[in-house]
Length: 271
Image (tube, rainbow, N blue to C red):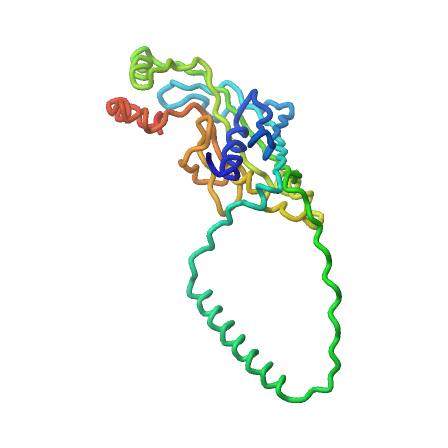
């Protein structure tokens, strides 16, 4: 069985590009561990610019329409998953961190020596009793943390008009017929969506475990530190080179390797 947190992140990434699927739940021994629900707002059409070409260089694909729509993903993550989440590996130490650690070690040694010296000398300062510790609220491991992510998607509708030779080659290589119409989707997180996902940026204190629960959005959340990924119904290891993800009926590398002639003749159409 895969690690629950990694599997939940995978399911969330898959749900981002689906058209009909709205809810995915993960159970273990009849206990609900994770649930993700997708809400898709009504889309609006984007006018095509007249100065832009709407056809691919080989005239196989023609852009017929573009639609934009906001998406809301609402995840319920059990506290058991948050408690036993795999901690990210710390980054390798740098020269600056090594120097800082050396300085901090020397400071600790000096502080320890000073405290030992001061402890040996008599002191008339009365000791102040520390306040009683605050009792930490205990939550049930089967209770849930609710986190939300707002996204924006743009879907381009493409008309497919291949030649008969190209269609035959694709059928031979992939054992699948080409669709007459397909979609190319781009999904990302804008500034407004990012702030709305964080509660509007009002400075409210996050609930304990909320940051760990947000890791289920790791495959879709656009940040400057992580690149988006290419999705073919599920996320792949292919990155997009920018902070957004794309999804379409791409031809996987494994399938294209079965037909090197096809790959050499039409390299822009295979990935």
